[in-house]
Length: 433
Image (cartoon, rainbow, N blue to C red; front, side, top):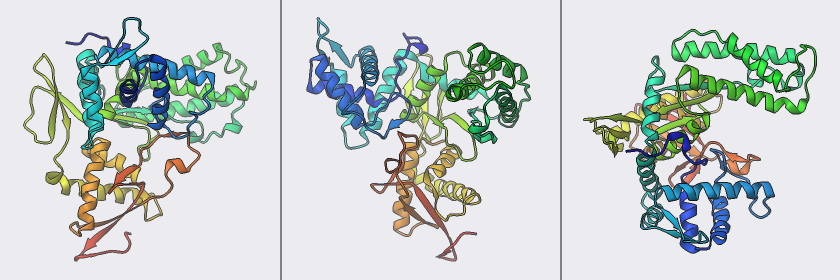
């Protein structure tokens, strides 16, 4: 039986934050010392305040604003850890202590045999017992789109993606023209992905009125707005339409913030997949890699949680040996599809992962397990294809601030580009046409 409303969840995404807190309390008791350790481990594990991990480290000289954010997150993690009885305070609240449950969870994470996933799924049980949020979101995903059940589409188009260069957007008229092009794309996407026809002119008029009232764009068409407001304006467009899709099209009952937190926590557990980088799509796709049923006879589903209503949550985890051929077929098909749009023999492994995960309804963690097994078979010459995996430029070798797409760990090394040869008559072609 749940005891907390979904919308009251604390404001952080990464489940590793609990580990960072527990590890810090294992070493120290005094709250300020725990906080100092928390800061260090937070950066070691690249934990940011957004849903992306950080790449740039500023742990040595954090600004006052950064310290305030760290303290806020620290407090949020403590509060939620107390909800799950992982930690507790001393009587004067100056010291923090691990509970027996917290110590067990800490040991799980440090287990060399897939520890982080065991840890994530133990946390999942604590969260689901308290909030019941994952069941709500999984059932919401299946019910929200009658045309393509389980697929939630949140289109996002920047001005540049619609061929409006920033330097050319200066007046209200320019913003209005961008908004018209955006509305046309959104209407097309609604028809394509939801099988419905909608006219969004009224909502667009409402958005433009809000921007005018907020003094972000002028009321006179030819008057220019401050260039400093450009990013705020485009963010308002993005947030307005994402909220519109969630609330008015899909019927989501809570805030975008709540949706994001539960979705990306679900992704870490492996029961929901979310991506903003699906090939040839602008925006975010969210879909379940689990179901809530009374029972299932399929060996491809593993029970994770029982509800008092005789329903259970089952995660889709196909057994690797039994599904190896299906995975290779899906991998090859996705590779050939991507090659049609790519001149290079090597293509992005993360793009390939997106397609295979969607087609087979796999978590990213399970995709990596399948690919590792596939690569071992490849090295042994036991496949109908030959795979080459290489490293292009890893995110930390760029100027990126956030790790928006995790590279794939294969055979103990991070890889991010892949090439596949197809065998014919027992021999592999040098090129695929």
